[in-house]
Length: 150
Image (tube, rainbow, N blue to C red; front, side, top):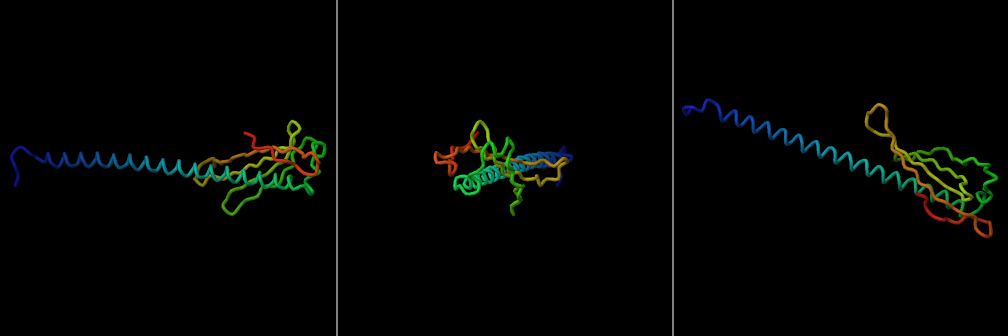
Protein backbone atom coordinates (compact mmCIF):
# COMPACT_ATOMS: atom_id res chain seq x y z
CA UNK A 1 0.00 0.00 0.00
CA UNK A 2 1.26 3.41 -0.83
CA UNK A 3 1.86 6.06 1.76
CA UNK A 4 1.15 9.69 1.17
CA UNK A 5 4.14 11.91 0.30
CA UNK A 6 6.55 9.09 -0.79
CA UNK A 7 6.14 9.34 -4.58
CA UNK A 8 8.95 6.82 -5.41
CA UNK A 9 11.64 8.29 -3.14
CA UNK A 10 12.64 4.83 -1.93
CA UNK A 11 13.23 3.76 -5.55
CA UNK A 12 15.38 6.82 -6.27
CA UNK A 13 17.37 6.23 -3.09
CA UNK A 14 17.83 2.57 -4.03
CA UNK A 15 19.07 3.50 -7.53
CA UNK A 16 21.54 6.01 -6.09
CA UNK A 17 22.88 3.37 -3.67
CA UNK A 18 23.15 0.88 -6.54
CA UNK A 19 25.13 3.42 -8.58
CA UNK A 20 27.49 4.06 -5.66
CA UNK A 21 28.04 0.32 -5.20
CA UNK A 22 28.74 -0.15 -8.93
CA UNK A 23 31.32 2.68 -8.87
CA UNK A 24 32.96 1.20 -5.77
CA UNK A 25 33.12 -2.23 -7.43
CA UNK A 26 34.66 -0.72 -10.58
CA UNK A 27 37.30 0.98 -8.43
CA UNK A 28 38.16 -2.28 -6.67
CA UNK A 29 38.42 -4.10 -10.01
CA UNK A 30 40.68 -1.38 -11.42
CA UNK A 31 43.01 -1.59 -8.42
CA UNK A 32 43.08 -5.38 -8.66
CA UNK A 33 43.88 -5.26 -12.39
CA UNK A 34 46.75 -2.82 -11.76
CA UNK A 35 48.13 -5.04 -9.00
CA UNK A 36 47.97 -8.11 -11.24
CA UNK A 37 49.78 -6.21 -14.00
CA UNK A 38 52.49 -5.01 -11.59
CA UNK A 39 52.95 -8.53 -10.24
CA UNK A 40 53.27 -9.96 -13.74
CA UNK A 41 55.86 -7.30 -14.68
CA UNK A 42 57.84 -8.03 -11.52
CA UNK A 43 57.80 -11.77 -12.21
CA UNK A 44 58.99 -11.13 -15.78
CA UNK A 45 61.79 -8.89 -14.50
CA UNK A 46 62.96 -11.52 -12.01
CA UNK A 47 62.84 -14.25 -14.67
CA UNK A 48 64.86 -12.07 -17.05
CA UNK A 49 67.43 -11.19 -14.38
CA UNK A 50 67.88 -14.84 -13.44
CA UNK A 51 68.13 -15.87 -17.11
CA UNK A 52 70.76 -13.18 -17.81
CA UNK A 53 72.81 -14.14 -14.76
CA UNK A 54 72.55 -17.80 -15.67
CA UNK A 55 73.89 -17.13 -19.16
CA UNK A 56 76.74 -14.99 -17.78
CA UNK A 57 77.71 -17.79 -15.39
CA UNK A 58 77.50 -20.36 -18.20
CA UNK A 59 79.79 -18.28 -20.44
CA UNK A 60 82.17 -17.54 -17.56
CA UNK A 61 82.37 -21.25 -16.76
CA UNK A 62 83.72 -21.92 -20.25
CA UNK A 63 86.47 -19.35 -19.62
CA UNK A 64 87.19 -20.75 -16.14
CA UNK A 65 87.53 -24.30 -17.47
CA UNK A 66 90.11 -23.22 -20.02
CA UNK A 67 90.17 -25.13 -23.26
CA UNK A 68 89.55 -23.24 -26.49
CA UNK A 69 88.45 -20.09 -24.62
CA UNK A 70 91.80 -19.72 -22.82
CA UNK A 71 93.46 -18.11 -25.83
CA UNK A 72 91.04 -15.16 -25.80
CA UNK A 73 93.10 -12.10 -24.99
CA UNK A 74 92.69 -8.39 -25.46
CA UNK A 75 94.99 -8.54 -28.47
CA UNK A 76 93.12 -11.47 -30.05
CA UNK A 77 89.80 -9.65 -29.83
CA UNK A 78 91.36 -6.42 -31.12
CA UNK A 79 88.95 -4.22 -29.16
CA UNK A 80 85.91 -6.00 -30.59
CA UNK A 81 83.29 -7.98 -28.73
CA UNK A 82 83.03 -11.72 -29.14
CA UNK A 83 79.29 -12.14 -29.58
CA UNK A 84 77.28 -15.29 -29.75
CA UNK A 85 74.09 -15.24 -31.83
CA UNK A 86 70.82 -14.64 -29.97
CA UNK A 87 69.14 -17.80 -28.68
CA UNK A 88 65.44 -18.09 -27.80
CA UNK A 89 64.48 -20.47 -25.01
CA UNK A 90 61.20 -22.43 -24.96
CA UNK A 91 59.71 -20.00 -22.41
CA UNK A 92 60.07 -17.08 -24.86
CA UNK A 93 63.13 -15.43 -23.30
CA UNK A 94 65.80 -14.51 -25.84
CA UNK A 95 69.37 -13.97 -24.69
CA UNK A 96 72.70 -13.03 -26.19
CA UNK A 97 76.11 -13.30 -24.53
CA UNK A 98 79.19 -11.18 -25.23
CA UNK A 99 82.81 -11.28 -24.11
CA UNK A 100 85.08 -8.24 -24.34
CA UNK A 101 87.95 -6.59 -22.52
CA UNK A 102 87.50 -3.48 -20.44
CA UNK A 103 90.39 -1.93 -18.49
CA UNK A 104 92.45 -5.10 -18.88
CA UNK A 105 89.80 -7.43 -17.47
CA UNK A 106 87.65 -9.87 -19.38
CA UNK A 107 84.01 -8.81 -19.18
CA UNK A 108 81.24 -11.30 -19.86
CA UNK A 109 77.75 -9.89 -20.32
CA UNK A 110 74.39 -11.32 -21.23
CA UNK A 111 71.25 -9.53 -22.29
CA UNK A 112 67.93 -11.30 -21.83
CA UNK A 113 64.75 -9.86 -23.26
CA UNK A 114 61.12 -10.74 -23.59
CA UNK A 115 58.70 -9.14 -26.06
CA UNK A 116 55.60 -7.68 -24.47
CA UNK A 117 52.52 -9.81 -24.99
CA UNK A 118 50.11 -6.89 -24.82
CA UNK A 119 48.83 -5.58 -28.15
CA UNK A 120 50.54 -2.20 -27.89
CA UNK A 121 51.95 -0.05 -30.65
CA UNK A 122 54.89 0.03 -30.60
CA UNK A 123 55.60 -3.25 -28.87
CA UNK A 124 57.56 -2.63 -25.68
CA UNK A 125 60.37 -5.05 -24.89
CA UNK A 126 61.55 -5.83 -21.41
CA UNK A 127 65.23 -6.58 -21.06
CA UNK A 128 67.84 -7.10 -18.35
CA UNK A 129 71.61 -7.06 -18.73
CA UNK A 130 74.01 -8.80 -16.35
CA UNK A 131 77.80 -8.39 -16.39
CA UNK A 132 80.67 -10.10 -14.63
CA UNK A 133 84.42 -9.69 -14.84
CA UNK A 134 87.14 -12.31 -14.94
CA UNK A 135 90.93 -12.18 -14.78
CA UNK A 136 93.51 -14.52 -16.23
CA UNK A 137 94.94 -16.95 -13.66
CA UNK A 138 98.57 -16.73 -12.64
CA UNK A 139 99.36 -19.86 -14.63
CA UNK A 140 97.54 -18.38 -17.63
CA UNK A 141 95.67 -21.61 -18.29
CA UNK A 142 92.21 -20.34 -17.38
CA UNK A 143 90.28 -17.35 -16.09
CA UNK A 144 89.19 -16.61 -12.51
CA UNK A 145 85.76 -15.21 -11.57
CA UNK A 146 86.07 -11.78 -9.90
CA UNK A 147 82.37 -11.04 -9.38
CA UNK A 148 79.39 -9.18 -10.72
CA UNK A 149 79.61 -5.71 -12.19
CA UNK A 150 76.73 -3.39 -11.30
